Image (cartoon, rainbow, N blue to C red; front, side, top):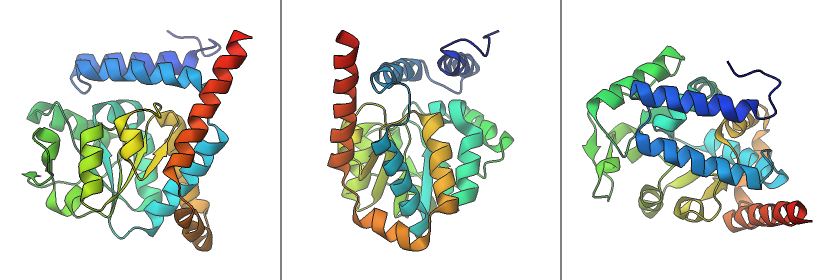
Length: 243
């Protein structure tokens, strides 16, 4: 048992959750590596929500509540770490939730769907079709879901699908601790924050942000500025650590 007063309690709980879900088949083995990579970047921003990430989370909420057909795309790691938080965001934003996987099997699709539904998420159902311009299984999606969405939140995303969704004219919001990744650079809006810190903030802003402010945040969205701010924060933390 991890004691709550351990200085790295949140991180260790997340690791245990990822490991347990990998054993259960929800998370792929490759997903474990991806989680560790994200943790490394979280160290660099001080394991906290920066001011620029806070603004990005407000902007994400503005896009979601202003969308005609918003969809939250969920993979194994997102389901493992944040199924209940996805439920809260779905309720606050009115977004659909669709499971979409790179390492896709029917068993994993069913396991992840069951985990989400056990946590109160309404998961979109139907026959997936190869509708996205990709050669792998992330091209499979629901016509009434991701394919017809105008705004897609894709936490812990891979870069080629992010680029494909952008090429289709969609607003793509991602949560990615690595501001240098293909996903972060290709997205319409990148939130450089840890998943379980970011989702509750987006949910809160979906509920609280006035309509007139939503338009302002959308109009002023500059993803390069968010990425630059994150890199500057990391650089400052590294410099401080070396003093």
